[in-house]
Amino acid sequence: MTRQQVLDLYFLDARHKLIEIAAFLDRAERATGKEDFRLKSFRAALTKLDGKKRHKAKAVLLAFSDPTMEPVAKAASKGASGAYHPQISLIGADKPHFKPARRKSA
Amino acid sequence: MKYIEPHAHMVSRTTDDYERMALAGCAAVCEPAFWAGFDRSSPAGFYDYFRQLTEHEPKRAAKFGIQHFSWLCINSKEAEDVKLAEEVIALVPQFLDSPNVLGIGEIGLNKNSRNELRVLEMQVELAAKFNQLILVHTPHLEDKLKGTRLILDVLKNDKRIRPERVIIDHVEEHTVEMVLDCGMWAGMTLYPETKCTPARAIDILETYGSENIWMNSACDWGVSDPLAVPRTALEMKKRGHLAKAIEQVIFQNPKKFLGQSPNFKLGK
Image (cartoon, rainbow over all chains, first blue to last red; front, side):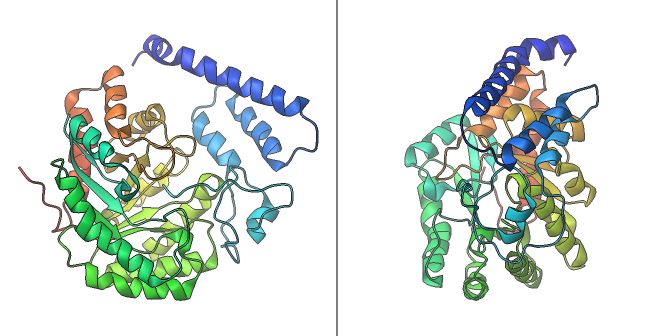
């Protein structure tokens, strides 16, 4: 596809998703209470969109990923939060203020 | 357009879904054993599930002219209990002679724990012993990168396992290259929120080529789309991919990989 064709096919959809991200950040920032590691991780991933480097989707996925290689001692939960946190990964357990969504097994 | 759905959990879907898939051109559906959304309390629960996959579900699919194939194993979400896993694995061989069984799957990791890894190795051993194809589930979200690396290490270290007889499923942009570089097949799952969208799946095809890659819906009991494969074929058409290239990905590729099992015979 030409760049023009890509824009014709996907620009409005991408614009819509970008505004959703902006609105999500506005929502999280005006909410009360402490934020957790997920928002920090989200902001770090956003920086991967900047600039002309290629493979931005891969860079964002890597930013959210557990970079370690040691198996955890025990799988105390089945869910994933979407963002890596060393302590949660190590103990595999829920934090008092954070409960991983029960993601399913597809 | 004729297509193969190489990964769908039809026990969780309605009969209407079979009809819609048939209308969309589905020739065959392949169903790996997976987590039912709750933990089963005994090996007997798995025995019944394996009967459902090998006896009942093929009949349901046949009513709509769709061939049904299955994969058997204990899934990684129920693999923390090693004793249970051993008992379930011991049940599998008696089902391997069923005419619709393609291999061992979907084995893999979920939270990348030591016990999950041990059970994965036990099931790789089972596949090697009975010369079965392997279908691998990779973990979700932040756990996928690490899990994929650990799984590839296990498979590469077992010299009995031929990489071309293994498919690593649920790849995304950060894991697809390492899978293909090992000579294994890669599966892209078209699943809302947690996996690939049709647009991203086609991006991956355009970036890494369409050899040794398939697409699946992995539709199950969660929010998912049993028509995700034909929907992605339509998206490929919108992008200007030729009919032959689309057919390659949605029909010929799964046929080539699955055809390595003597049980995968498509009707005329």
